Image 1 (cartoon, helix red, strand yellow):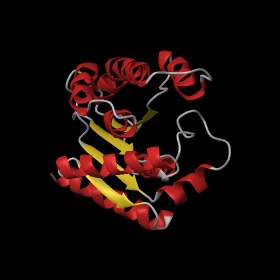
Image 2 (image 1 turned 180 degrees about the horizontal axis):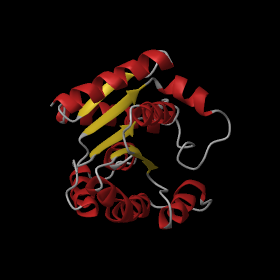
Image 3 (image 1 turned 60 degrees about the horizontal axis):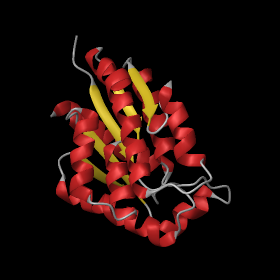
Image 4 (image 1 turned 180 degrees about the vertical axis):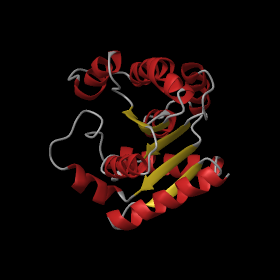
Length: 205
């Protein structure tokens, strides 16, 4: 049995990554691939309860508490869902992972990025995605796509999301082999084609 692949989808809220991850999942299944479509926070089981706290808790949440809740969700997700699926030879498509914590809590909230990287490494036991796709889009457009109904994270404001966007772009500069950036202002069809091209390159590597 071949070892599976771990692919993560990243970007600010409203960037279109969820649409693209679903399109890729459908395409891979159509060509006979076994996939696991999952997300952070909020994979099945304990993750669902953690997601509810992170996105909808209406009281004050300190940046440190927020980051540790994301990390707790990640540790559970990696150990109980992602690693077993990789060993089964599946292609894991994950909506957000470690780079979200770096971008949102590091660049966005201003927490120490080296410490976040260190804690991410503990939470994942060193597991890294084979490919990370960042869907980049200007904040004004992304906020329009999100709409008026926003969860706690989506309500953080324009300055916060500008920092998050810059964070993702910095991550891509630091790890260009793993992290690929796609312009999310393009059409859904063109973006999907670019995603498929990246997947083809990954298989050829």
